[in-house]
Length: 298
Image 1: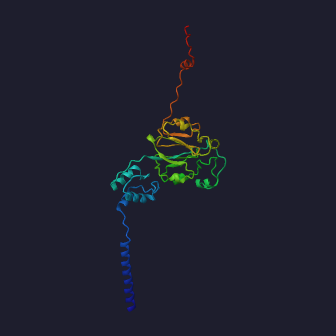
Image 2: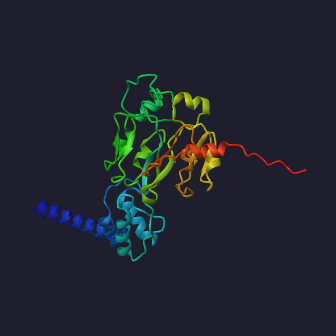
Image 3: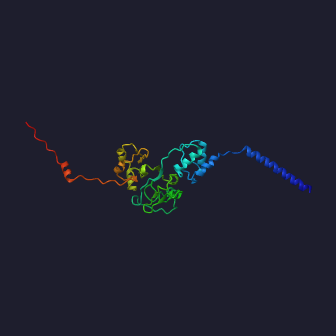
């Protein structure tokens, strides 16, 4: 009986000492969390896509609260609506952000970029890029295995079976950048949607010299520089044998599209061009008739 009593008292004493130690430790090493972090996290879409540049929605919420400002911060999945809710919770002002969308900068369809070999490995763009380099002669174009489709959490990108290229659904795309990270050849770019969802860009990333690029694809950029000369706003530059259109400088005049000899420049959501009206035959003949000068008087 004495042994049982001693054991009970010993265990009680040990439990009491452990409780005191845990209490002291919890007070000393307690981590305070701002309750606003949970409030901000609730209004986020919880997509955890990483498009904001932080590790998940909780990381983005914590960054917004601790920074004390929403400058330079944007939730691509939630958009401007989510940022306004966050601003209301934190008592801050949400900056207006320009809508963006993912753009596939490759027009190397089966017709424009013929296959020279057959890839029979794992259906992964990373594997194909690291092993055989793809089925075409272009070392920069789309591999067509659909890594970008698997990476998109919003069902905004799909492979076109006819062209073998990915296509982006503008209505579903949140510009999170997951497809950009998944593409080993970096042919997908996040660009501003533009006024009335209109965009002009070079649909090519081939950096080979002109003759090599033309053999690989019919619509590849050959860095001829005609678009640069035609642009009045200095929006186009040529670097590493490839033209690039700066969306912040482009005024959507489409003059570069008309002069591109390889049709590598693409204009999206524009109305069709009006056909050129030819001058009547009489006016053309009149214009071609040489002027006869009257004889000078002696």
